[in-house]
Length: 412
Image (cartoon, rainbow, N blue to C red; front, side):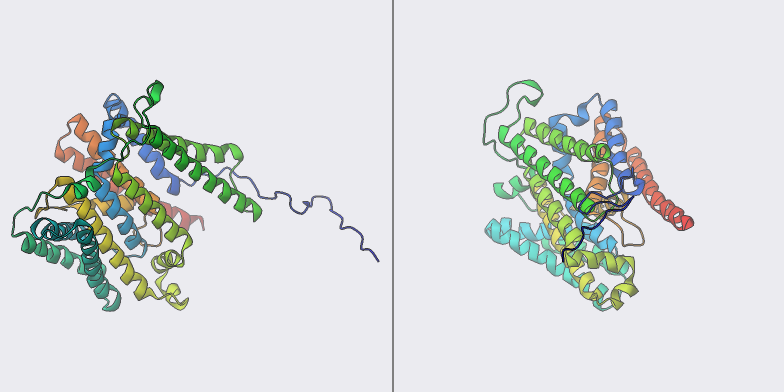
């Protein structure tokens, strides 16, 4: 006996049909940082008569603040887990001094020296991670002690003097640019840009759009709320055009900086870890609710330990970049870097209590600090004025985080 076909009643939706609700949504807490960056860039662009967005100046911003952005990636993970690291500036100095001792004074081949320096950073991170994770000393105290200890190590290695110069390869990693593989575009707004770099930029933009369209399709498939198509396209296309503009401007100067390639790899890799990997979800669990994470079987001590190891490696990488950029390892290297990295994480949306934050947000926060420093330099601001503005931006970012939490709690 053949069964009668199922009837679709009034108001029902046929199987397979798109039932995902559309809703115009804008999360000010998550997207406010990008609006803030856009407004700051616009303000300094107008004030400097467009000099801020010139090809050479954009390249300078990337190269000059790359090491802070590297530190911000590791710092935001530490903060998400509910901890802090005050020692990264001293670790940058110590690892840079260690690399100089190997490469300059002992003629160790640079690839071996780079690997050894990263391993040295990992050992430093393991040292601090042990005291925090397994001995139970608060990270604030451990890394405050580390700030003093590793600055002393720097003085011990350098003998209170600078060591340099570094070989060309190390300097290129910090200050170099990708070579032009194809001819430059000679006409129009793309004048002087390397064709290969433009192709790379288009490929990156295409990848961004594909990922976002696939994510939207997945939400529709599971009938989750999505933005209307016009708003989705606005959120997807505007950032893509900005990325393409940045690539073209950089390619018009001396091409893409190598540190930008390195940063792109780090951002993509760490974003995948935090969004897709089990370890990334465990970081948020530890910072969001430590007791619940423990009861859920998360190895909290192990997670915290490896976060500090990771911070040590990234600090060593930043130390190599900074020493290569200056072509010198000096005893005062890295001063106040920890403050800039922490500020970048908090301005980028990380919560003081932990459990909240994004790698892209920390990079955005670091760019805000970089744009303020660079724009202030173009305008000839005094040092105290720059410090006043940066301090105000940090305070407002944290105040906004606290206010939004109270508002959410009150709504419940």
